Image (cartoon, rainbow, N blue to C red):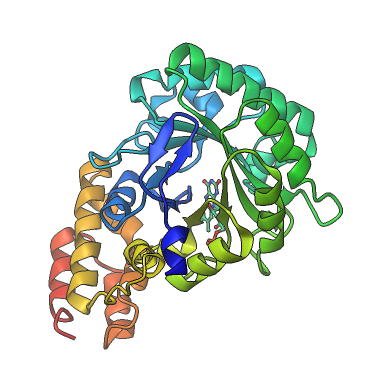
Amino acid sequence: MENTCLYHPLSIGSLHLTGNLFLAPAAGYTDSAFRSICVEQGANLTFTELVSAEALTRGCVDCSTALLCRAANESAWAVQLFGASAQSMAQAVAALAPYKPDMVDINAGCPVPKVTKCGAGAALMRDPEKLGLIVEAAVQASRKTLGAVPVSIKLRSGWDASSINFLECARAAVQAGAALVSLHPRTRTQGYSGKSCWRHIKELAAELPVPVAGSGDLFSAEDAELMLRETGCAAVMFARGSFGNPFIFAAAKSLLTGGRAEPPDALIRINTAIRQLELLARDIGEKSACLEMRKVFCAYTKGIHGAAALRTRLVHAETIDEYRSLLARYENN
Ligand SMILES: Cc1cc2nc3c(=O)[nH]c(=O)nc-3n(C[C@H](O)[C@H](O)[C@H](O)COP(=O)(O)O)c2cc1C
């Protein structure tokens, strides 16, 4: 009974969502094909992989159009931007007008040196004042050019263990107009190692007047339930736990609303993987899609009898037909 209220509609500024289960932004994984499958499974809000504000502003279409491809069933679609200046952020938000995003998210958590060296991603947290100015510029640009869709920000706990400043950064962002704050409570130095510190999510949720989305170590429906219950966050964001396992959304919704979803059998897992491959092939071509999908097919085939031998062969598959014929033998396992 108590779980029922953990799954609920959520408003982020003017954006009204039917539920609070999000697909986190994840470079190299959350392309439109995968996002579309996650929406089918119950994701209520999806984020693109991070997109460079600079590249978008320069009209560098090659590196931004595939990233900005929206699936037909994505009714709540956020574009995530990374950038290091208020000016480039404002220009990038304006450049998003043709894509009609439902929300613009600012990345203040990416730990990758290529991004932080330019002052973007997690480096924004080293200067909360500048972070606030960047959010303010995005909010103003959204008002002028995107019909005032909400602007959100995704933070880490801080740059390193000696500079935990997520509260200060979140306050600056909200003051500047951010309508949602997502927190992955690890420092930039931690990368993805160790355990995420959910206590930080709890502190943030208690402090902010806007919704907080919690991220970090959500590998099952039960993890999502625990995070919602323990931290009081308004929404949860699945990342690694969803790769090759979009079924985690259906499982979480079911658990939170008092039911229990049947785990998908081998046939469902395999057919879903093939469908993701087909969708991806439409966007980036068959050859690239087959290469890209290798990393997630392993997760899709987890638990299937004979999966280890299957994976060894799958990593050499170069066409959709090859994938299909290799997988056909395992459908009934
Ligand atoms: C491969 C990978 C790529 C990621 N890319 C992004 C990204 O582009 N933008 C972002 O804000 N976070 C990114 N993240 C962080 C996730 O959104 C999430 O906050 C983090 O993985 C913690 O959640 P998890 O422990 O459930 O995976 C990425 C994480 C992974 C593992």
